[in-house]
Length: 90
Image (cartoon, rainbow, N blue to C red; front, side, top):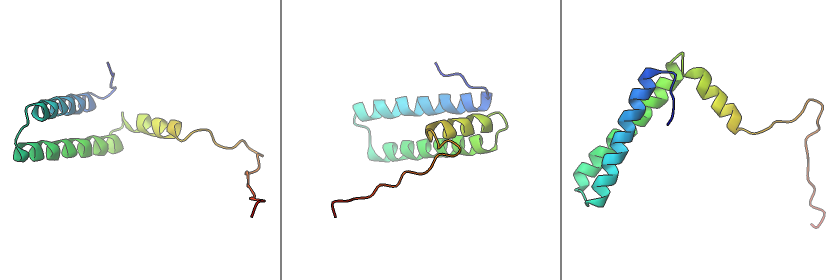
């Protein structure tokens, strides 16, 4: 189970999970296109709200930046020269 430091983010994540569950049920039951379109729109709005919240919330900003830097991978060491490859075949 995911743990959130921010209660607002927890509520948004719960709402998003409920919408995804509803979407899965609608796909299985072959729901109407209009209902599916509205549900997809709601999901997009929730994703935008979560992104906006993470940018502006004091509790969430440090977590989002640390996750972003962790996904970037290792950088060069100080004094390490950049690797340049030469194609000698051409």
